[in-house]
Image (cartoon, rainbow, N blue to C red; front, side, top):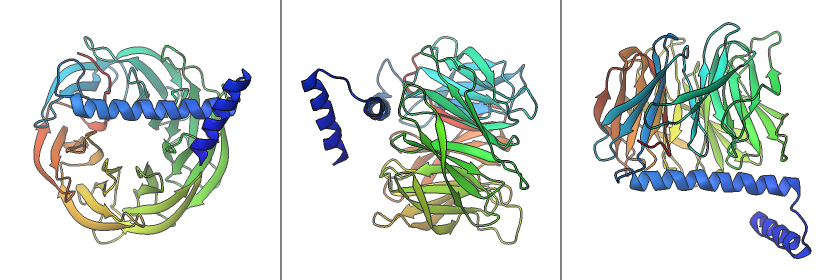
Length: 397
């Protein structure tokens, strides 16, 4: 019904010689951007074995400013093996990365716990690796996550120690403009903002607060001057520690991995509203304390969910997702290297790659699309403290 209304608005504007409203133009732009990104993922998943455009893995790490911290690998979709083609140094602790929707620019945090905390922009270059464009200070210590709006108009950094999120417009050349907004949540209880994730339609942004066991919802303004407006707050179980959040491909559900409780919270989603309905155990180790669940992903077909656990039980918990209710059922566990802080699925869903920070490698598992289980791992060695993995869509060599 919504698509029909938008088509009618376009037709009416065309017939009268008028222009679309700012809100409609923004919605159309968001939709086009999401369609473009989806098409790019499908295209690369299908053609990454052909000549020309390839599928590349980009890894961020904890690294000294003088050492390489971002690594680029060409990924072989037949066997999961890689070949390093580039690296970048000069950034202290580029521990989280995000790719622009057009695949031409990469963004990184510099996770430092002082006034030098910042976000960095890069242009993807096939000959020399990511080329640094510029940087902006976050105004909050220990930025640990960065996300780019689906239309590519701005990015948002989550400042863990700073207890805040910072909003930066993006220029046409991919560089980062000075911050235009900052939201702080510290009061009598210390906030620890851990991630920011846009809704599937790009109209809302959600930020997890590990310190206060909350998820904040922001409305994105539909105009040429993008801004966020705090819209909602969802309270989770006390002591859960929400860390990373992911939406189901259907757009009907969202799931958050809780670092402190070692659980996954399943939530129904509808137009900016999150409603928790299930807490499923990710880390099954007994006793209180010592849990350290970290990351969460969903298979491209929406049938399986994966979450990583650290500290006591290094590995990936595997869940099936009910097609009718979105509820989770634990079906397996895959041991990994030490401290699996971050992991990612290949666009075609055939592989799952795990960044094992304390084993200094990335482990590649082949995934069974029917059962969701993992097997036959291959190690990518020679990388110090890897903690973030993204696909370099559109990267050329």
